[in-house]
Length: 291
Ligand code: GUN
Image (cartoon, rainbow, N blue to C red):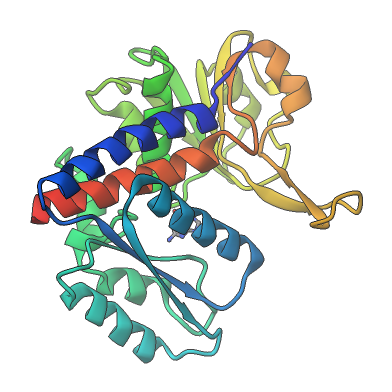
């Protein structure tokens, strides 16, 4: 069993980006600028946004963090997004999800200029992804593709089982893995909460992408020998032995599953850092295509 190490692969991507940004700077060109919007103080969202801002620093991007109270109205948030849309200095906009219940995710996503939608959540960008056109690929599935590419995992002709059908991960992941690309060219099955005999599908899988958000859902008896496993789960479960009071658990029971795998991502240190590297790549691409 070998580890698909997201820390190593993401560092390689960030190192390349840092060189590319230094080149832009040397040529007097515009430096990529990411605007991150955080509403409220959800602990996990705080951590993710802080990691995104830190990654911007590492690669030499400019970043702006815009924070709002939990109680901000939807109208005020949309006004801010429109300001960012109209600000020529801003290349990428991300609004960290989830948003408070009184704000519609859909309204917010639809308001972001598709050309600055570096999360790749806007329907225009999702449509472009479906058609195989150039687009901003949602950061988590894009990061997984970059991870498979980094470790030269063979995917053509393989059976990939994606567990979870979210707009952010499962659905775009299934499109990417089935695309005529490398990585790609998989035969893809999407499983979800209504799937019957989920174990049978998993046992036929050469590649499993676990993205359902249920800690340790994938057990050893669901996995055949030699499977490649990508674990997208990062649930905080209480742990009194830790200073933070929690530990992160993936969707895969790592200890029992890992010995059966050819490759597996750890949690943390697998998909998480790749998501951030992918966001940085989208932001860089947004900057260079507009300038
Ligand atoms: N919440 C969970 N994942 C993501 C992501 O990739 N982007 C944003 N904006 N919010 C998220």
